[in-house]
Length: 219
Length: 219
DNA sequence: TTTAATTTTTAGACAAATCTAAAAATTTGT
DNA sequence: ACAAATTTTTAGATTTGTCTAAAAATTAAA
Ligand SMILES: [Mn+2]
Ligand SMILES: [Mn+2]
Ligand SMILES: [Mn+2]
Ligand SMILES: [Mn+2]
Picture 1: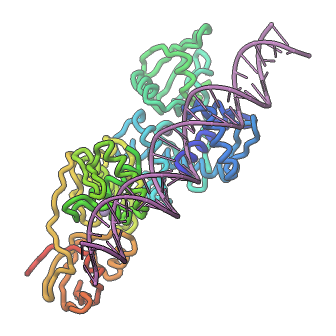
Picture 2 (picture 1 turned 135 degrees about the horizontal axis):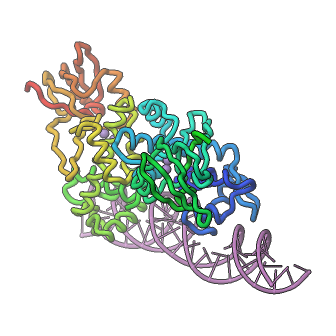
Picture 3 (picture 1 turned 180 degrees about the vertical axis):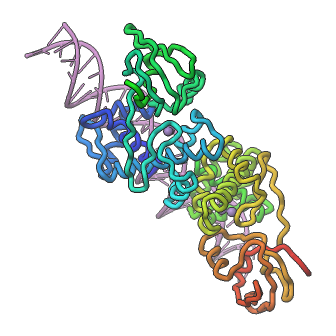
């Protein structure tokens, strides 16, 4: 399995939550910042290897083998991110790009020992669940902040965008995993929200609210 | 800089200790388990990029930039090997192949923090010096065991072959870094040696003795 | 239900890295 | 010094992964 093939599998895995049928070629291309023609070529090759199912114009769907492999890559990505934060003093906005490289290192023992060193963590620095050795992924219960109504409250348990620009934006507003967030007001017009965090109030856009996940506290 | 280019630079760096002039194409090919024609192509490309000097039929010699880069890769390789042994319970015969992958991960901060986590180690699990951040390499004082005479004694400070088969062979004879080795007898015919380590005596081949480095204790 | 817009696939080209086979240069042996 | 052996380079091919431009299929709009 090449580095590039692994990246495609991981992308299809991450996207197929949002698509009932196959994941469209264009969706993969956009996510990977590449061209649709390249994606078309590659998914054909992956289908050849039976890592995914593919019928022309119908998008891609991981096979059992493909999903198994994708989950392994995700597990490695999230363990490495956790390592970088817990052991090497990285902040949550610095780890994604490095984990993109580290997730392709091949060694069963390495990942097993890393897991042990970290004390078998359940989630990564962005609140995402770390699949266990057998590929089981715990589904984290959460709702998008954008869907909260005025007056509702929740605890931040995850983000949907791990880019450093977004995470730094959250840092600026002192939003972090575990923080209690209250919706003081919600603008019908553009979906922007007035939030309260740690007795401070500020406004965030709908786009931002679409990338923050909360666990409901009172409703 | 691609992964393959880095591997070539590192190989030339490791080999040029043994060659006054340029490192021969064939030497590189053998070390990298590839074909001379591939090497010829690649060193031409690296010369193009001014990472090494190359005149037809004269072999390769690293430029200052090339050497700087090679040393960085070596530093990463040895820090990762140290990490695997010190933090992840690997033994010295298991780390080389994984470090071959990890040495290509790109992140200044990662390697800086790794160095800190390990307490700024001076040598790797095989006794090889770890270049510092500025690329300075301490020259370790050592002599090949094969060159020792009958009756001489030394402390094991390094190996010349980091393959797992050789290191496991050393383990079997309980030869490890720091062990005191005495040459009880030496066979003129084939260069094999009778050694004493920890009050046990055994015989090793000339090939093995050529891959063990000692620091002289009494002479 | 045709037409228009969008999505997806194909065709053809290209760069990186490798290989085999053959040619050229260098080194060695007599 | 000349022939033989060895080393190194070139020529041509292949695989992987990507791209642009054009064709084909699907979906949306009028
Ligand atoms: Mn990530
Ligand atoms: Mn993450
Ligand atoms: Mn090594
Ligand atoms: Mn080493």
